[in-house]
Length: 158
Image (cartoon, rainbow, N blue to C red; front, side, top):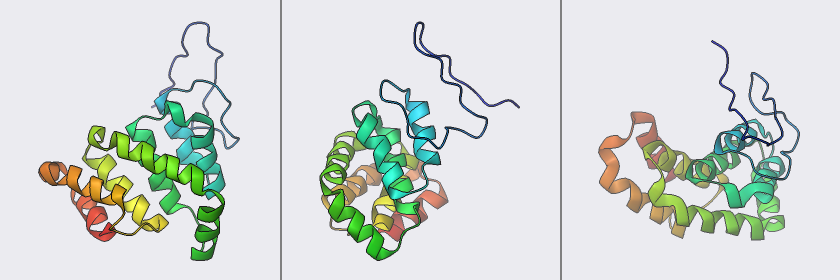
């Protein structure tokens, strides 16, 4: 069927989303819906492009956007050296994203917890990091809600 397109709020500028998701250009400044933010994150194809979405719209990120950001950062094609250089260059913004993650962890569903765990670990955070420990604590009472792939992602992260 046809892809779902959200209706813009009355008086808001209309943003057409192509059938495959968000355009590969940086998102405009201003209010985007959580669904639009997820589309931009999903289509961002580099570490800087993913973090740019957070820099522009982090204050609008919900828990799903936060988990998606980590998932995408973990999956982005980059060598270990490129990730280290990126972390050094973007340390302040990445720490803001970590703090944002810490504030939203308990609103994540099982899939979001698994995606965030996997993304953080794949990006290079150690299992002892505060955010991964918080995600682990959030996962434990909900363990029955996880799909097998989610459990595998969490196990891999630790």
